[in-house]
Image (cartoon, rainbow, N blue to C red; front, top):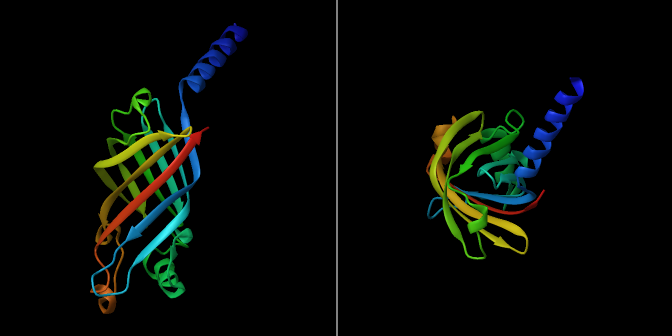
Length: 183
């Protein structure tokens, strides 16, 4: 009896593992822009974002270490980490969700636009991302995902001091680029 149960569990595990095609990267790029015209650019880039996509069901997840965002000047980066993102208390930002109606067999070298629905967790707050367009294509055995979405700083309980409030937009555009390879 034990052998039968063990065999069934093994077969189910193998079928589940073989049935899922997962693509992964640890070098994804995530940028954000919160600039206001006539003032210094408020933008940063993180080139070490981990992302995974299950092509069978469209489930997607990405993780970025907040301290890995690089600004054009060190003082801005320091203020971001200490005063706004509080990256010692909230070291990670995550995106989780699903690319709707993803059919791996329909993908080609031409961008296919799909809708992404999920959540963004940043600064200890989770907010929904609804119907965000995402471009996906296959290129040299990689899946290339690109897109952007906009969030509000005020939605994430981040306090902006009055002295700089007019130099920083409440709307932040987040842009991503992931080149995922089969796991």
